[in-house]
Image (tube, rainbow, N blue to C red; front, top):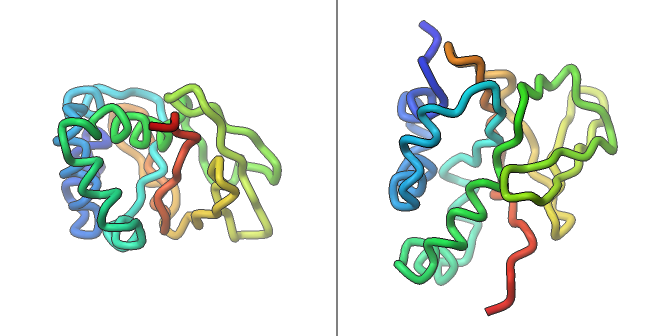
Length: 148
């Protein structure tokens, strides 16, 4: 059965528990549940383990909440971005008002973040009943963050 929304889809995947927890910590559960006709590039649990522990500790702290929200919004774009329609060099406008870039070579597709780091799409075109889409990725996309 097709999940009703992005949040439900993530909850059903044991590889997405960290992302679900971070969405909850950021206070974005309802926003993700009601998101329609959007694409989430969803980092798996292993992607978050690649981040420095001190960054994760900061993101889950009250002081880090604005940065956490910015990072999470950097994983969402309007419209359903099916992999077969993505093209090399394509710019995607993310919900935090920054861009990512598509790197496509045959069936291998990566999303390039503001640091030039590539996150490969490993599980494609997961649809929801409310017209949204999840592309599962191997690394966390990091936007340009304001210096603190």
